[in-house]
Amino acid sequence: DDGPIDSFIRTLSSLSAEEWQRRIEALKTLVNSTPDYSTTCNDDGSHSDPSLTPCSQPHHGLTNSNSASQSNNNNNVKIPWYRSSKSVRRLAAPLKTLLLDARSAV
Image (cartoon, rainbow, N blue to C red; front, side, top):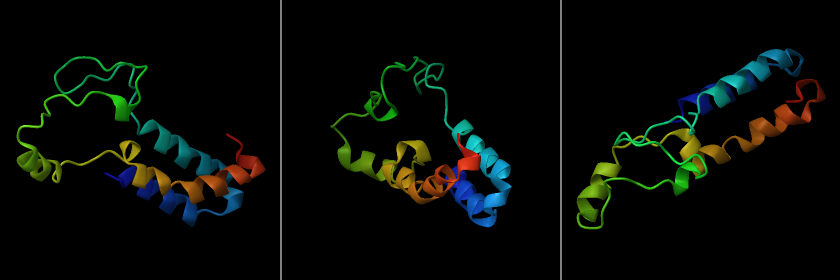
């Protein structure tokens, strides 16, 4: 689900550099769209290990036995933007422009 990234990129594209405060608010909104993994529960109700990154968290319920049917089921699963390297790479240019503006030092 790239909704937060799309919104962030659209906002930064539409705002001029002089509107740096609104640009910072857009970044805060993007950051706030990520969960706090120290308090996030897994699907099975257990708590995540806060020392693990989201990608290194164990994937409960996935086994190798029905890999073909699982891959079909996984096609319907929405991956959060912060767990998708492709989505995160889309942030490179917008973050670069934001961080190069001295008025918007974050």
